[in-house]
Image 1: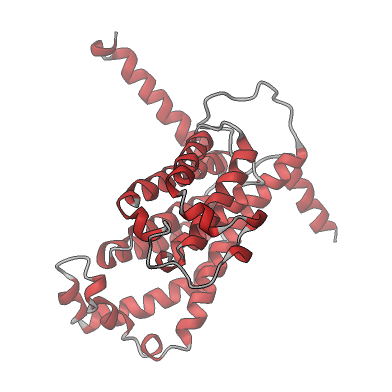
Image 2: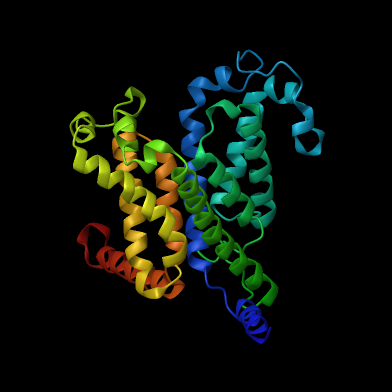
Length: 304
């Protein structure tokens, strides 16, 4: 009990994730804008009243605040325009947590309008947006910082809880995925990547067919994926193993992105790895980068 009280006291004293929460807010906003711009050509197909993906029954009960699906669908361009403005405000730190709440609600509604296109990355993104509502993710990358520098213990507590929740959520994803793989014959027998790499939908590189036929690669990649997902939730909390597991996880997601063309999904999982790295390290690297950029602009004659 004493250790628990001490841990809670530490969460109140100092924000452990203030830089990376700000960086994550920036990345998430840019990812939302990218997804929105990419879907512009398919808006009528995905979200409008003309879409053949519309469920037969009215899904009003699935929405918060009694939004009617039909009203949004037949005014989808107005809705998306307002959504884009809110994302831009959130990107620059305008409106702060209120804007974060509205962006989350609007993204949640978009997911419910067209659940057929969602994947695991979309689900993780939704939870990250939810967690960020309660955090101070505006210490960096904002237009105007607040003048008050008083330490708010409640803000620190919820920001630290947000960062910790994202870390735990990531570990749960890996662990549950590993448990499901244990009960799957293709994973248990070490041949899962053979079938995956030979599916046309996941033919992301000209090497897929070659490596998919290599039994050494198939066996190592299948069991390697399984063991990374199983051990990551445990070993990443230990300092001696942390960076090793982060590197393994990044290599895993990079290989999936390259070989299977699941780009946004894997990019988001790679970004979340940064929450396990100390805030001091991130701040030091960021300030060092800023110093180099400023020095470059000062000494370069083109900018004088």
